[in-house]
Image 1 (tube, rainbow, N blue to C red):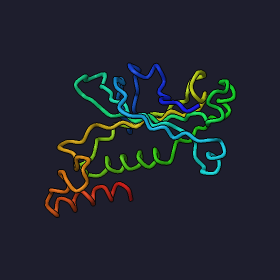
Image 2: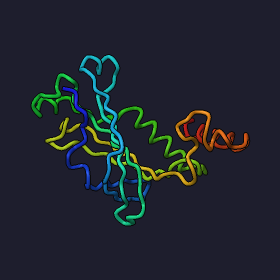
Image 3: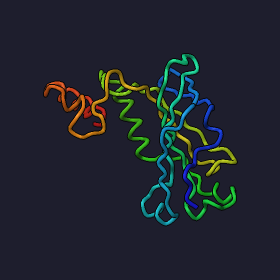
Image 4: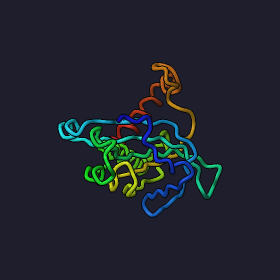
Length: 186
């Protein structure tokens, strides 16, 4: 059965502890911004070497500074379409610990940006890994969180390709922004 949302009912108001290097911050989820569901059959999961999952974008508040907001993306394994209505013990049999490749790539990019001198991207707050509880969608499956602050300044664009800050910047400034992003992904 396809779900509109796999977000755990306990997520709003829950605390998310992010760690980056030796620094730890705690955030309280207060709003779901968006959810992207990547549902698939068991055969598709095997053929594509992927695991069905959902990506939930949350708006959160720092518990130490309630004026500080962050975006946290929660990646969570969901059951294959055949197991969606199955008992918990059957769904637990699908559990994996490995997070999706796109989550790993995004985490790596933010870590590289943090290590560099880039000031045009969101500040990386850290990550967290948890296993789903015994009553989760896939008991023992992964839940992975990535957090970041909104970048300083104004967005590169406004959703209208060819318009916005990036497109209206001087060629030298555009090149500087491109190089910062390129360094992060190489």
